[in-house]
Amino acid sequence: MRSLIHGSTRSDQALGAVHAILDRRLAPGASRPLAVAFSGGGDSLALLLMTAAWARRARREVVALTVDHRLQAASADWTHACGATARRLGVGFRALTWEGPKPATGLPAAARAARHAILAEAAREAGARVTLMGHTADDRMEAALMRAGGSTTPDPREWAPSPAWPQGRGVFLLRPLLDVRRADLREWLGARGETWIDDPANEDLRYARSRARQAAKPGAPDAAADPPTHLSDHCAAQAGGVLSIGRRTLAKAPPADLRRFLALACVCVGGGTRRPASASLERAAERLRGEAAVTLSLAGARIEADAAQAIFMREAGEAARGGLATLSLAAGEVGVWDGRFEIAATRPVEVRALAGLAGRLPRGRREGLQAMPAAARPGLPALVEGEDVSCPLLSPVAGVEVRALVADRLAAAAGLIDREPG
Image (cartoon, rainbow, N blue to C red; front, side, top):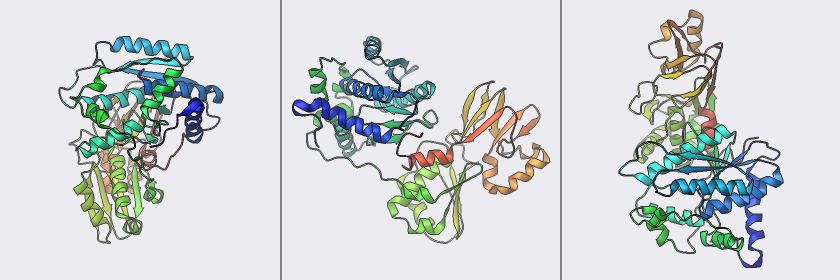
């Protein structure tokens, strides 16, 4: 693991390396603000300082987002200190909180999931599409040690879509410090006269992350980022949140690439967040490599394949994950239905699955259903207003805008978007 900060030029080297990443990942000339996840700890403080310096040159605004998890007695004071630091650096600031009861078990994972959702929502509200996070080389080592001990902790990647869904739709995470050691950052901060917050939870050995932090040794190998899933390049998006891909393309794909593509496609089409189990993926991949007709359900998705192509659509009969639930929108509200469609309405509307309602569509609109796979039709969004039923995917509905999220989500998850959208 190389150090980017050493000798008398450590400041210039650190800034140069991080700024080079920002130059590569962020859209030139963009005017959107940049969000920085800022806990007040040494890693996020160094990141905020470096990002603020880059943003001044690029003439972009920066907003620091601080999440109070309400887990430490001093957390309110920490949030206040973060706000003071942001003001001193001339960047925007938003104080956020994780409200509600906290789980008795699995607290670190629950806190991480809540934090991602809160940060993503705040970034979207601020107009940012990139949130920078201060993960370092040490975090990569700790994650590897945790996985070696049986944990499912993901490996932090330099560039990735937000894992929160649907809050994180269109939001990407950028971690430009993954090649920098935590101790080097603190040395750099100390030379600048900066102070930072040390969360005692980082030393609490009841948590796997804290145990891994103590066990991490210098010189651990770099963690490789997931390569782009190029199968997604061959995947076509159809109306109604349906994806299709040639059967021969699946048959020729390397096994690992096929399994990853199947997992991502099924999660995106199914609208959820949990990937299929490894054993289920193996069985599905084996069946789809052949030419025989295949019909199967996986992670809320239905796959129908003939000798020519495989079609991925929502499994309308799957309700175990709580999907396909009714969504009620007030006038002017934007919501996401079933994790697949973003719906904005200028008047109150109720969104349901079309299953059981297709007969109430106007006759001309029902004919439009014939262009869609039969199994996909019950999982389409329907607007119910009194006795009237309409489907905005079949024809425009006044005062309602619908945006399908499946194809964009797949492109982001598969690594096909490698920098800030312009």
